[in-house]
Image (cartoon, rainbow, N blue to C red; front, top):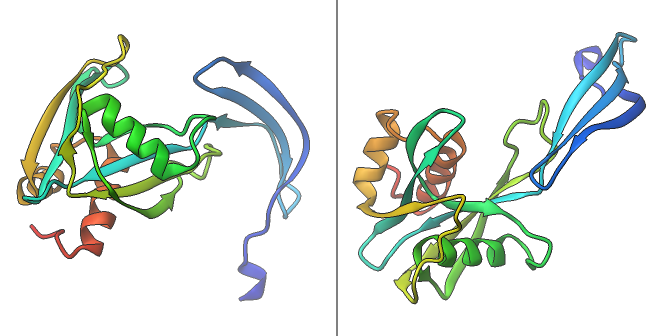
Length: 188
């Protein structure tokens, strides 16, 4: 069985094919442990992301609905975004994103998980943070490129929507399942 253990690939060459403020596309020339050459192998480089499971004192989840151009749909999602260079980590990034998108804040934060959006071709992590007892602390500051509608739903309703496939953002469904599962609130 030891022979079946996968090994890391060797990168013979690497180059940036495209780079802008949103992403970098890298092309690696790789050799697998078995000697197979894969060239180019494309990797999408993104900053880390954060997703906020925000619960108010009445166990409602603060969410957003926004247009997502890639799929061409209105999508019900958690507050989320990139961890920016000035952020001191996922919790600070989550607090910033939650305030910007919803106007909500909290004094009770917890880092729940670090996931990979797609380990096959993404190099970043998606951090799940939990905010408890969130309250409205200010006005949302919508960015012109993302207009969001605030949605406040009971936990049971959000779980139902996720299980019915009516939440299409897979990373957000996973984040909900992990955070609510830790609180024993992920129930159909």
